[in-house]
Length: 137
Image 1 (spheres, one colour):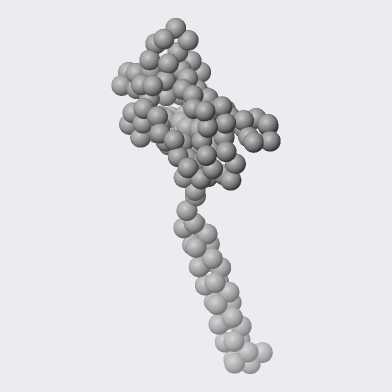
Image 2 (cartoon, rainbow, N blue to C red):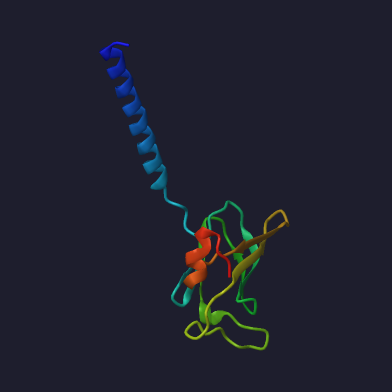
């Protein structure tokens, strides 16, 4: 092989490597869409980003506390203070004293099919730190 051919191959290899590095960086910078259920202090925001209306909406907090809405139109938001959530015997949720461990939404779509969303919470403490390494509780 001549020096010119070898130099050409080295330059091609470097270019391919540079393109691959740029593509992996660009992919890593992609933004994930925000969670449709956002908690901010004492306020829950539900974002219906679909093209379907959600009817007969029930939002359950920690399996016991519930709030309802007749509907959430497509491409709109609903906000609810957390102290609006009420248990079966009338107790109100106190976000100052109670940790939120489960949050789910159920609704009916226009075609009559059920719809459900469940918020995924990150694990705290050692369980969350060991999760990437296959650790369990």
